[in-house]
Image (cartoon, rainbow, N blue to C red; front, side, top):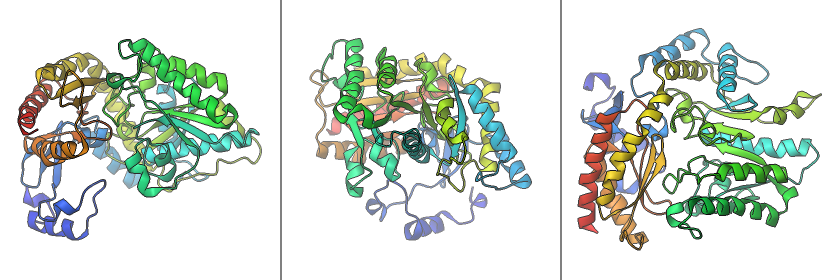
Length: 460
């Protein structure tokens, strides 16, 4: 193991403590503890600098769809780097960007035929809002600049994407944010404020809240609605029946663009290349990233319907937006190889075939007193934790801190399972295993969760 590293583990730890600033990480508590260092991956597993194996139950960060250590993806990157390592898409193109754009257009629903590459999800969301604003300005409606998104939803960290994000604790340190971002209720049926005994009626109410927001703001001021097919933050909120169809009707009625944020949900996570296909709606834009390359190289994309690009095909019009590394030749080559692997191994089909078995393993945890709700779709699941199953009473902030950060996060990691224990909303454990996982990994997930959650209940 040590031969594969340029530093010993002690040297890595010392350097990490001196120089590395990790993302979304409390650095203080690590001062007197080791930084977890993951050194290699193999299929659904990763290994740390001590040689310990972990089941990657979060696919890195909802990203490594095809599993770790896929040599065909590494080889595609190396081959492209030797041929053309870099060239921008600013007034030029390169073969892999053209080929990948064509392939994505073939896979995308409806007439979403134009692909604007980015390097990740936040940039894709940022690009979508910028396009919406410039599109309406170009079409003579400059007052349309506002966007609507859902409470607790995460859409990214750049200032525009952060403004669309509906998590107050993430937004407050950076205020004032970009004006015009309006929030509406999400689709957490477990904690439905109305119609908590009728999911269809609840879905209609939640969709109609979008229309009420459009009318409050003034329809001629609203540019777009941003929605994840299954909302990540808060714990995998699935859409009620008919929800997206009703939202589509509302957007059409008021001339508002519908954006499907599929940064997590696309590329097999829910059993389809695009989750909008699973839920039978055609958005005006799709934002995607993560699983597009299975994380083997950074790449994201904004995919739009034909009418949105038409004003920019006339005269001297230009979408005044660009990113240096967007559509990077190496990333596009990896994306093409990744999608070829998807097709050869039918990874979306594997998710559809296995979804019920994964759900059954997670549903079996319902006998534990701490488990309030199990929800999700495909290979994307959340388990909400409660103090009282009957009343659905949740944990207060201090209890959540002790439960999630002082116990669950380290205990799950020590038990060899990488997942997310989170309280952006109510406390949840989230799981998004690699798409190559099957019954063996499902049982491993279930066993670890049962042991750790049983112990957690004794500590409340």
